[in-house]
Length: 217
Image (cartoon, rainbow, N blue to C red; front, side):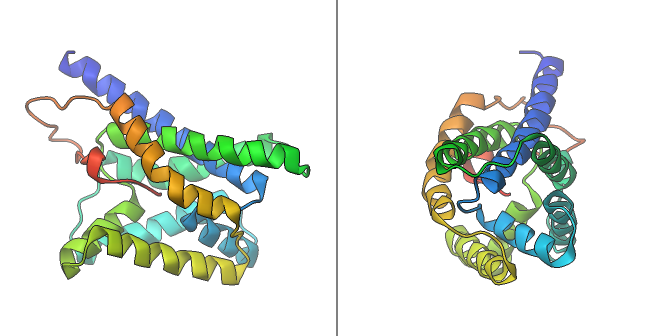
């Protein structure tokens, strides 16, 4: 594959993946059976402020990105795009999908949201345009503290879930199901969508290491 074609494929994967990530998060919101950790916080803040959950996601993503400065993390195109595209796609999907009340519909919606989230994660991380702001926070703390990535991720996500729950975010069976399934799903789709690196690397954007980073987000 030529360098030009490879770059084009990576850009398509990045933006399709981010848009689908926002859409999948919206499906989890509509299911109402529990959200992924960061969106528990986003929903809680949305309840508190009256802003949409997508707008809150953008604001929190931008705030987290500011924390990269003392951690000396370098953002890429994917990092900045993540902040805006996911939130916009989430609000757009929520505006299009009608409210559902039947459990017979909410359960399939939950499962579809988790599966789509795994697919979206594989797409955008495999594009190698840099990690999302929240992943960069995790890896930056890992590097600065010397603690394991797993410990940093667990500590951060427990903190955001607890805070979001106190503020009114939805924690439920969907939160647990997401936690246990997103890793295997993302790893599967990372292999499916991986774009082989060019021999030279880009000087314009920071490339991530997709097989070592799992979102969100």
